[in-house]
Length: 287
Image (cartoon, rainbow, N blue to C red; front, side, top):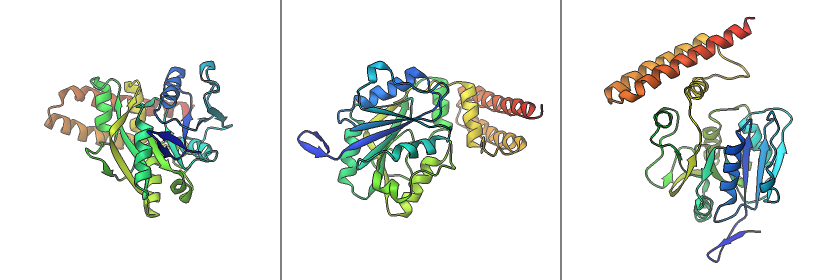
């Protein structure tokens, strides 16, 4: 059964929201944003990726169409999404991360776009930080996030913050690659769909808001992940330190050239904390 808007019948659409040790207030905010869409999701699959303590749906959200699926072991974001996708029966499905708040018209605009463009498998929009003037959010957007296109149209891949998919296209590539636990899973699935003839498009006119609270430690951990850190098969610490140091040099040079002087202490702090995290990990392993 579909949903209607302005007398136009749209196909049914569900949502999959992976969660692992999330801040309860952020989880509720994301769920409420999904429940407040101008076109309602027919179902929402909240996948608890073995959080400790387990995720519990707040009383005020019970009976709202949200189902909680708890996984016995933590498999990473790709495995959590796939577990939720196995339960989806709608023609379209949105994968939304916790700490991401789609604007009220986000689903209506994205769903209408996919219906009007039958060769497009995935549609995504801007995701802007709530504190867009803060130093750390600006640094993260500049160095750790994809730069968004200026116009609606084809994109190489969709960032994984909030994406609306055509479920048939995801099924054709057997969903996300579960070996990619924390990074590159969004680009990988889009590239594999493209190999099957499906496009990915960026859409203007609506957006999402990230309520992520940035810290230097959080940025450093993400930097290590981007440099190849993998908890399942960690590379040598020396490799990560060398990669982080090379990136530090490049960023310092670019920020000096572009006169982004406020970024310089963040550049150095993120590098220093990354090295400290690696050193602490090595000491723990050598005990």
